[in-house]
Image 1 (tube, rainbow, N blue to C red):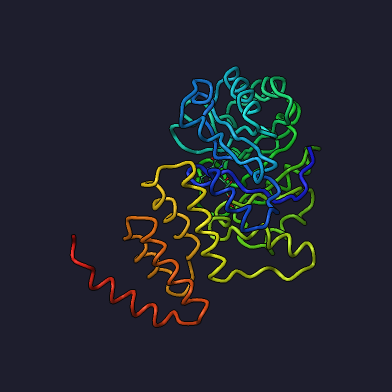
Image 2: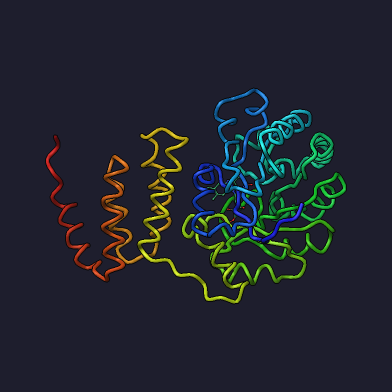
Length: 341
Ligand SMILES: Cc1cc2nc3c(=O)[nH]c(=O)nc-3n(C[C@H](O)[C@H](O)[C@H](O)COP(=O)(O)O)c2cc1C
C-alpha cells in the first residue's frame, strides 16, 4: 500500500479517537499521511466489548488511510482481532509491541512481546496470514538499556511478513522519560528492507523534515506535538512544497476547537465533552501568553458552552492584541465568582 505523505499521526490511547483524528485532518487540510487509532484490545474486540468496538469507529471520508492498532499477547486471538479490524475498514493492521503499561505487559502484550520473540514471530505470521491488508508493527528500542533489541525484533517481524516497522526510540523501562534515541531508528532502518518510521519527540515541522532526511528513515510519527499543534502535518507539507509554513491565529484555533467539540459530540455523551476539550486546550495553549489563565478559567467551566465562552473571548482578544485587558477581566472573574445558584 502506498502512503502519499510520510508523516503519521501516532496512536495515543485516550487521545486519538475519531474526533481527534478528524480534527488533525481539518487543521492540517487533509495532509495527514496516515491515521492510526488508539490501541484496541484483542480480547475486547474478539469478545465484542462495546468500548473496543467503539474504538474502531472512523469517518472514511477523512481518516484515510487508516491503520487500526491492536494489542494483546495471544496468537490466535490477535489473528481473529485483525480480521475484525479489517472487516471494520482498517486499511492497515498494526500490532502494538510498545505499550509499557503494567496491565498490558502482565498479560503478554505491548512491550512484553519484545521479550517473547518466539511468540511475537508466530503472532505476526499468523496475523499476516489472516488478513489481506498489510500488517505493521510498532516497537520500542527494547525492554531496558541493557536489552536494546529493536534490530533483532524488527528483522524477525519482517521475516514473519510485517510490511512496515515503527520504532519509538525509548525502552519500556524509560516509559516516556528522557529523549527518544533516533540512533536505534537508524539502526533498524539499516537492517530491514521494509519501510521504517521513527517516533519520539518530533515537536516542529522543521524537526520532522530533519528526521525524515536521516538515512533510511521512511517517515515520522507525531504524537504529543499534534495535541499542541494539530496543524503540524500541514506545516510539514508546506515546507515540503517550498511554501512558508502556515501560521495559526486565534480565529483558526477557535474554529478547529469548535469542530473538535462537535465531532466528539457525535460519539461521546455531552457530559464527557468538557473533559476532552480540556485535554486538548491544555496542550494547545501551553506556552501561550496568558494561556495558563485561560486554562484556569476554562477548566472551572462545567459545560461546553461555558468553556467556549472563555475560549472565544481569549482568542478574539489574542487576535486583536488585547490580551492584557482580557487578563484583567479573567482575573477579576476568578477572584469574584458568581454566587452559587
Ligand atoms: C497519552 C499517550 C498515549 C499513547 N498511546 C499509545 C498507543 O495506544 N499505542 C502506541 O503504540 N503508542 C502509544 N503512545 C506512544 C506514541 O504513539 C509515541 O510513540 C510516543 O508518544 C512518542 O512520540 P511523541 O514524542 O511524538 O509523542 C502513547 C503516547 C501517549 C503520550
